[in-house]
Image 1 (spheres, one colour):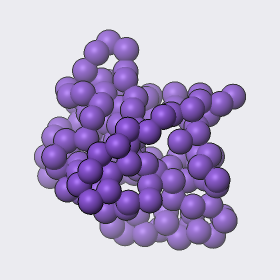
Image 2: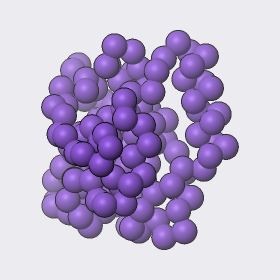
Image 3: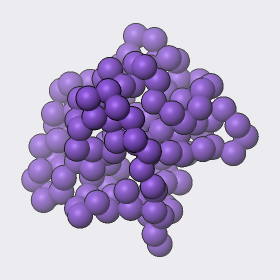
Image 4: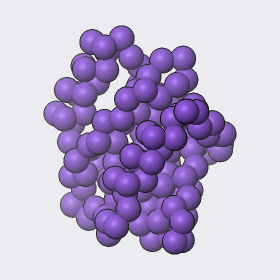
Length: 131
């Protein structure tokens, strides 16, 4: 996954200081993230999980398509756990082709990692920052 330093900072700032998980979509072309969509977390217990509003997600997916972009990733935060997919994250990984970016706020300095999750198998991806 290739992402600008500014975009990565925006994702971290979205998560920083919150006791609940934040989430969003990452769009771009050719594996390069060029647009971040912050999404509302509608999970009943947002401290331990995230769920995007289906209507909001559909609208964003239409916008991504209309702009000639593709969905490259889904991001969310772990306020009090490591930047690694939880069993729940794996169960909810419905898009094999995208990257799952997780921001952990467990340490003073946020930790960001990306993963591919296919058929329950987790494989870490390298994050390349540009700009």
